[in-house]
Image (tube, rainbow, N blue to C red):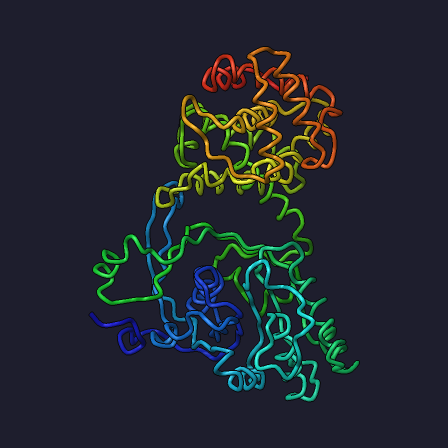
Length: 489
């Protein structure tokens, strides 16, 4: 069977190279490069992506063998229906291996049409390596490579302020654009590149912070044979992603004119402050994941999709999000409810098996960052405790007993957390007094919470009541009790 290439797909268009992308992995091809492909087909963006492989090993050889083409499958719930669709992405022009094609990489800096730089080099990628030097071919760190590229651009165009870049990192760290710019300026100082270059970085280039959101399972190893039969060609770069996508870019509104995602109907937002959107994602998407996991697992379910579709547990999750998390957030109610609706659709995705046990890793620290802020803010705004968030905290303590009926739960967390729960539960005698001691000691574990949660009015008593109910009556009856009650004082 013939391999995917431009000779096979003759209608695949070619565009001027406008984008440099550090990172050739599944996520960027299913997210950024797909969006550029959509813009090319529906707007006047008219640009292609040169993909740079930032490490010695990677996929650019396969990318070049297929002339930059690959097939993207998007599958998930769309407008209430399970949808699976695929398309050929033609926005990538070529790939470069920096370790064998460094001169071509430098030459790319001389292309006057190049305008955007995107990156996804893992969370550890935006880091300073003090041993990096300008003359390295290439530098070891991504910011080092970027600084060398920018300096060559600066030299090639004699510091022309019109030849700067819009730089949008996609790494999953907070304030990623600011951190990247800070390190670039560190290299400029370390390498003594001069004040005029620093001024060019500051004035000619726009570094944006961004938040990306799309689940990308990647290459479909389990189903590639049937996919190949369906496509009628061989594609070594097939990538699978969910239907949902969101890209929040903090930067000046004029960027929209150059990167017209809004005209292509894409869920890409240019905002003055991305903080509310990051908070929305962490509290609603991640917070619901963490809160539902111990409740649903101890109820007897195993996946997120089962959970949301279950008559009782599904109701619990929806009420948790709409009644307790959304009221603590500051975006418009319409925006928050729309996002929550999309989250629940994503949770129901029949094409992705999202196991609760995999989500349960490090649940204590996750609860602290994802759910505790909602719990505390709810109390702060309403002077009452959020009933279902309190219940999820009780369920979490029960989960860390390490048993679902007679079945052992393989717990995964920091050793001190595991030892804390082992010690607490080893002394459990079934009494309400012992339950209260366990709750008091867990809520008072300041190493995790960075505060003593026993000081939150009514919280110790409420968690004790729920935990005792779970331990004596079982999760099913305890949850039904909670769903029949309103917020507790």
